[in-house]
Amino acid sequence: MIEAGGKDKLKQIVLKEYKTYSGLVLEDFFRDAMKESGQYTRIGYWHDRKGENEIDIIAEDELSKTLSFVEVKRQEPNIDHAILRSKADVFLHSIKHDYSQYDLRYLGLSLHEI
Image 1 (tube, rainbow, N blue to C red):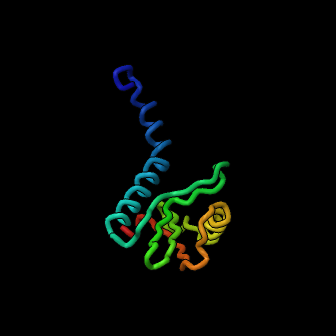
Image 2: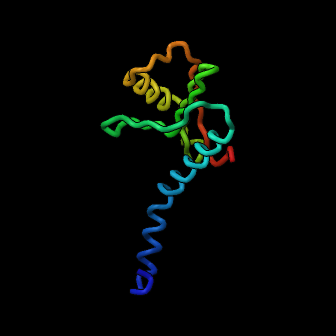
């Protein structure tokens, strides 16, 4: 693209996709940090089949019976705990595992926590 004189087009593409890309990188960063902490026995993410509900990180500690639902946003004010709880409810009702004995936690992480 650059060789064809498309610097301006490339710049537009980068600026258009930056927020999405940097958000995914931030999710990976926090997921890796949580894995390295050794506090959890399972870490992953979840989305429903329709793509309407997505949870950036779900971290479980089967020993202490805690389940953490994590929303990752670049900007802290964009974290909405009510929406996260709603998504977590959808998750809990859609799976076959019984988490009724677990301590459920809802966390928001942003660039501020780095």
